[in-house]
Image (cartoon, rainbow, N blue to C red; front, side, top):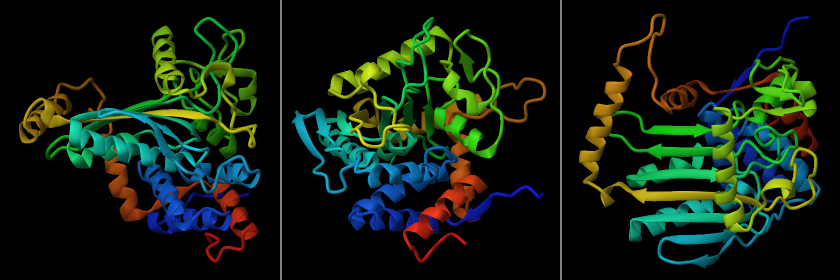
Length: 354
C-alpha cells in the first residue's frame, strides 16, 4: 500500500480555513482571524507542531465549553513599564496578541515594558510574539508555562514541569533578525505527538522512562518524561521561567497545571510574559543594526568543522522557511489533514481542503 504524502496549501487558504472553523464554533470573526493569523505564522516558520496541527484539540476544548468565546481580555494592574493582563479564559492567541501590542505601546512611550498574563490558554509558538516588536526597532522576549507537565525535576520522577519555552528576537539590518525560540526540554511534547500521529519513532535523548532509560516509542510517552536541555542547567532555566511567567502572574505552575491534552473543560489559567525594549535606549538604531550585521556575518563566515556546509544563526532557517512557504505553500502531514478534513465536514464548511 502506497504511503500517503504530505499535501501543500497556500498560507492564505489555511488562514481562511482556520478562521472559518473558529467562526463556525462561535468565535467572533475578528477574534477568529487574529487566532488564525497567529497559528499560520507558526506554520510559516516551520513550527508545524504549534500551528494548524493544534486546531482539532482547540476545537475540542471550545466544544466542551472549556474556553470563553466572548471574553473581556483586560489589564488588572499596570504602571508605565509593566502590566498584568487577565485573559478571561480566552483563546491564548488573543490574550498574547493583546499583551504584546500593549507591551509595544508601553515600550514606545517608556523605552521598555514587561507584560505578564494569567487566565489564558495555549498560544502557539513563542517566536510569533517575540518577533512582533522587531517591526518597531525593539528587542522582544517571551516566556510561558507549558499547558501540560511532561518533565520531572532533575533527579525526580514526578511530572511537575512542562516544556516551558523561551524566545528572544533581536533586530538586524540587512541580515535576518536573530530569533531564538526553544523549549527547555530537548524536544517539545508536540513533536512527540506528531511523531505518534505519523507512526514514527523518536530519537534517543528526547525522553526517558522512570528508571532513566531511553524511551523511543512516542505511543509509550505516558510511561516516561521529557529530558531537559543541558541536564540540570535546563531544569534550572525551566523552573525560573515557570516562576516568572506563572507564579508572578498568579497563573498555574507545578501540580496545579491543567493537562490540556486530557482535560478539555477545566480552565487552564495559563501564564505568559512578553518583554519589549527599544534599541535606541542604548544607541542609535542604525548603528546597532550595522554592528549586528557585522557580528552575524562574522559568526556565519567563521571557520567550519569538517563536513559542515554552513553555520546558521538562530532563526535563519526559520526566516528562509517563511519565504519558501509563502511562495510554495505549507505542507500538512496526512494524519493531520485527515483530522482537519473531518472537522470541516462536521462543520459543513465550503472549503474541506480537498
